[in-house]
Each structure stands twice: as C-alpha cells, then as structure tokens.
Length: 227
Image 1 (cartoon, rainbow, N blue to C red):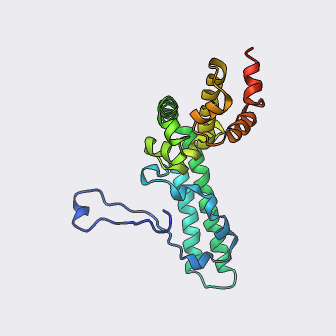
Image 2: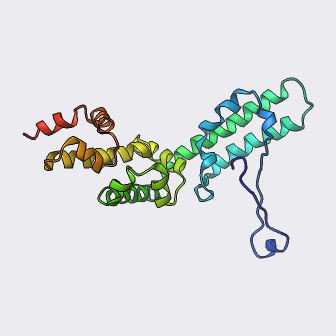
Image 3: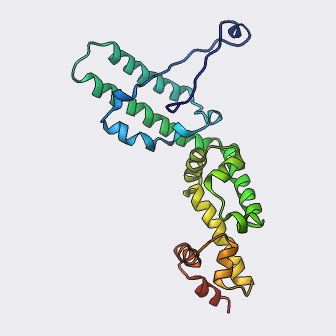
C-alpha cells in the first residue's frame, strides 16, 4: 500500500459470514525514514502505485521469507533501543521491499496465460487507435490511456512489459507508431510533414528525429530504399 491509500477491516458482524483473516501489517511513519537513503530510493519500488487487483501472489516459500523478515523487524522493534536500532530496522525494511520486487518479477514470468492475454489486448488496442481518427485529433496515445483501456495501473503495465519484452509501455507505443509510419512512407506519396501530422506530431522535426532514432534512417532515406 502507498501513503494515502485507505485500508479497512471487517466488522465483528461481517466476520460471521466470511472466513476470518489474519496476516502481517507494517506501518511506517514518514519521520522514521527522514533523511535516509531509503527515503530517497523509495520511488523506485513501482508496486506502491499498483492497483488492489494487482496484488502480489506469494508461493509458500516466498510467504515464509516475507514472514521471517517481518519477524526480524518485530524482534528488533521490541528490543532495547540503541543507536543502531533505526538503521537495522530500515535495512530490514529495504530487504522486505527488495524481496517484494523480486517476487513481482517472478509473478510477471509465471502468470503466462494472463500476461500474454494482456500483450494481445495491448496490440489490439494500439492497432485500433492507430487506424482511427483519434490519432489525428488526439496525437499518440498516452501510457495512462492504454493502461485505462486494459484496466491496469500504468506502473504495473510498464513493469510487466519490461519483464516480458524488455520494453516499457511508451516504447511499445512508439514501436507501433514507427510501424504505421513505415507503412505510410512506403505506400503513399504523402510528404514527411503530412505523415507526421497524420501521426499526431505538431512538428515534423520531432517525428523525423524519433523515426531515425528507432530505424537508423531518416524518413526520406527510408522511402528511397523502396525506389
């Protein structure tokens, strides 16, 4: 959970109708991390921005590891406080976060059916968008737009794509744009400027720079290869 997210628990009446749940919770006051290396590096843990339905599914072995780290934190927390206490607890919190990062990486790889369905849906969404008027009126689709269409948080989608394909969501969008650009350059007589506007670019120079960075050729040089 990220700071500011709301957490609720079942009332006594509700517990009579569902299985009683138990687990671990670690609450960290911001002041505890103030001016520490972990406070500065916390943003690299993208899973704090994942949605509730994108939770981490632990194996029994992984769950045992997490519980072990939590128990070590608990032991240190209730021990006699000295000048090492805060640094030791913070180091164990970082271990906990790194294990979560590792286990999410594993989850991206092991949930093959669900994840490859997401890849297929992503391809379909981009294909429809790049063949619609939205491209001309709204420009390139944003990462947020694609994530909302997939009902996935932007960070979870990019994390998933980076593990499965080596490219994040923005790079997938750019690759689809280059694919469309190649089609227009090779099969029409439109100028580079006209094609760049069709693809949602306000400035042809920006389109040409991106095209060359992705293909190694300028748009005109690419067209000449078909002559």
